[in-house]
Image 1: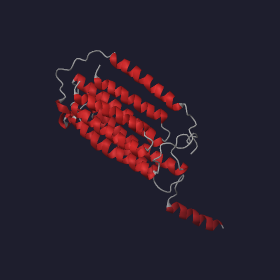
Image 2: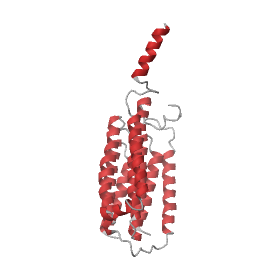
Image 3: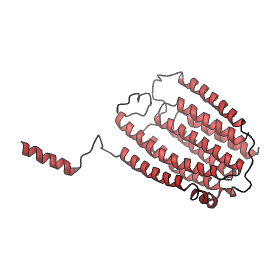
Length: 185
Length: 97
């Protein structure tokens, strides 16, 4: 274990703990940005260069900017919304998380020694080899993700569209109903 | 056992604690992102240990999924905030909008 591993581990755990405990949501979001950036460095060290850059651009960039934007938009920076109806939830949650960690660590420790594939090389995880894989065997997964991203974009736009309550009538429909009402009178 | 696998388990547990202890929807959502990243770290570590790039391809798929999830999730949170003026999950105990 090198010094890099140790420093990265300490930074990752510290920023993750800050992200789940800080009282101010903006501070928690910034701690999470730090966590994602350190994780990108770990990806670089683990021969996943393309993934590291994607982590910086998509996660630390786009996703967290969206998070911070929504936090500031909703004036929701206070993490503690008044009286807690379940005050025992915090220690119980900590205990459950600790048990879960122990189970997961035990499961990982039971993994046998891996025998590296002789013919496949990581090649530093550069876009070329990863792209060959993604547009080869993973092509259908990539296509499905394209469909999913499109659907998610449409859903997000529909969800936050201003002034929509229930079914919205087209102007022509509303006009026609008004005409029918006048005729009926 | 690999050091980074242990780290990934620890990050996942921290994210789980965040999901269980946080009380506003946005912060719970951020903890879920932490858990997704812990899973990604495990994938990349497996890829490194076995010399197989497929783990990295899977991690890229997870990142794309997370982007879609964030778009829809934050849209839902904004819509709930408009209806309730709050994103505290204690207040969101009814199914009726």
